[in-house]
Image (tube, rainbow, N blue to C red; front, top):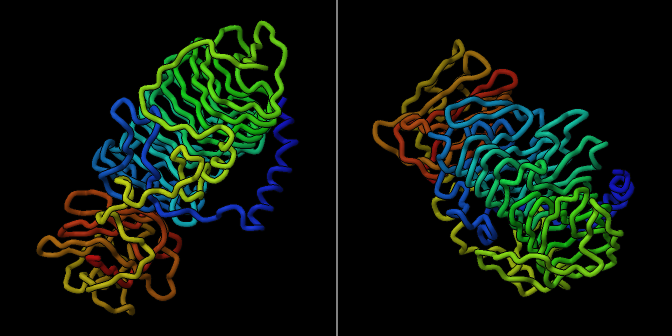
Length: 514
């Protein structure tokens, strides 16, 4: 049943390799700015803002993502986590704290709110590792790739879902992502984008879903009909067997998507679901709209769609395709404003905008992709953290500060990290520990430079930068070097080593205002 995915996969991978070799495919991510803000149903029910207004931190491991969540003052404290690099099972451990409930081998967004996860720099790839959203609200996931998440075989993560939502989830915006597998259920994969158990007010936009047996679902069973109010727009579904998506109850708005090589069925509206499908482009596919594998009917309102080389099966009791000439059998009211691209230009627009590392380009309904507006209110403002790779400028504030810490190895001193001498250093008494610099009055700091002693470079693994006055985590990540964060006024700053290889030795903990 799933062989069609495997048959087509090798050809599609070859095409992707050719595109990369010829420079057609974009290979680097743009800056961590939101595109034009949330769209669709994610704008309803109070809206979706993610971590806007909170701290911004960098993470290069799954553990660092969990540390950032757990280091917040509360489970609802806003935070934006900028992710770069490959996140996998080897670097994603459980972290405990009062503001989080995490688990190893999965990015766990459980019982939390007001979080943005965005890929930056050279891109963020979640390799064989899914994102699980449970009992949470106001979440944004943007500009990341999630691939090859399995529910069977090894390793497994998130029940085989690239992104899965369940149990009272509200207001999620997933944008400019690439969600992909390498086969169907028999190869160990499940859904790419699943919502169940009372999940509502979700938008999936400008994303690529490909090479999977199952695109995604709304409702896990015929009795799970409490989900809905979901928008899908400007997405590419490519080489998918079925569920693009599967709808069990609820309302969905599906517009300006490009569907290519749907091998068994496409939009599957069941159990009273109502789907409004506008100006989509269906190509080289089978049974792209209808009620399939059940006699519990769903409904659709259709307008402006193009069916290019689409084949339709004969109808039976549990197989009710909408074609060959789809017509509306319900009416769906949409509560938000939106602008449609003409269906005939959807393949071109989607090819330039959908997926991670596409520069967060969007469409304004003119069939011409637009770059993000640099003045958009969700773009970085002067209070955002500087680029951690920028060299520090100005005076090293540590030279006039005091120092203390949690532990120190024999023969080392806390003061060695603020004496300006690379020949002296502080080292914790074990693989973890913390060292602080402190001032007699509040001092503004927005960047530090952690300089390892000669012969110990690379020993520092995971870390956190903490405002000791309030306990707030200013930044978290891995490896020494320059670390930037939103300006903080404080009397004491702590650098906490939470993981290391070998004996970490800090020669200088430099602090800067800008």
